[in-house]
Image 1 (tube, protein in one colour):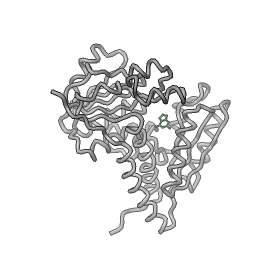
Image 2 (cartoon, rainbow, N blue to C red):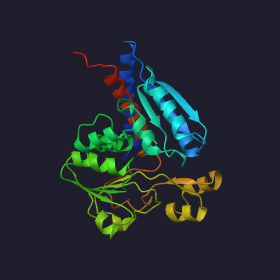
Image 3 (cartoon, helix red, strand yellow):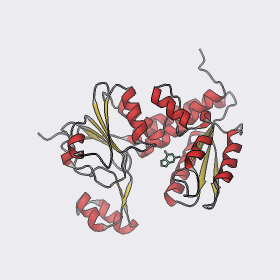
Amino acid sequence: MEIATRPLDGKKVAQQIKAEVAEEIRELKSRSIVPGLAAVLVGDNPASRIYVRSKIKTCADLGMHSETVELSGETTTDQLLDKIDFLNHSEEIDGILVQLPLPDQIDEPQILAAVRPEKDVDGFHPINVGKLCIGTYTLAPCTPLGILEMLRREGITLKGAEAVVVGRSDIVGKPMALLLLHQHATVTVCHSRTRNLPEVCRRADILIAAVGRTALITREFLKPGVVVVDVGMNRVESVEETERLFGADSPRVLETRSKGYTLTGDVHPRDPYGIAAAVTPVPGGVGPLTIAHLMKNTLTACKARRAVFARG
Ligand code: GUN
């Protein structure tokens, strides 16, 4: 039976979250409190530069103070630790994010552990990871939080559902699995060594794909009625591959020809239609939710650090 697949509009949910954050910022400003975010960018990774620019622009849109700290690709761990120490002590800064990946010479675990846990709006500090594990978190990674919020607002039941997470990264896969577990889903985490991946994925009522491999998830991975969340953000640079994935008459073919690439997820762009109940598009699905939740985390950090409590 052919199922009418619903696209999940991450952009719309992100707009709602941002509007709510902006409203709270206006309220705080009337009490002379301006939440502030610092973004640290090391080196000149073009994708990281675009992400940071987009995060900073969103701060401005919502009335939040922001600072970008740009450091050369030759920066040492000690130099970066000095910058973080400065931001840890800065009165205007409530949230610090260090854009990943960092250049190879930098000791990434040491850097993530140096950010004050109260300002760790990415939720990457070991203390915040531990709190997420035992369910007492206030700051957790933005992408999984955004996905959870979208599923909640779209009315998708998690309690008792079979959730399969493909990917075990510290940024998405692991925290996503923990958040789903706290919502009483039955959670399976798969990765590159998982045997019979399509078969395991076919168990899913909710399938989260976060591995960074173009169109890994095809129709044989999908149970009819599954909700598919595609976290992948992969570049396809070949016109032939774009044609194969999207169809020869898709506007994506023109995009690949003119821009040199088109963005695709970890899920085949056409296969879920007719099988899945709902699917997030790429782009415009999960991406906007990550930034919206970064704003929300910064607001949360601000209220906690400045001891702002709800009135009434
Ligand atoms: N690189 C890819 N995703 C993220 C993220 O959510 N936060 C940071 N800081 N870096 C990233």
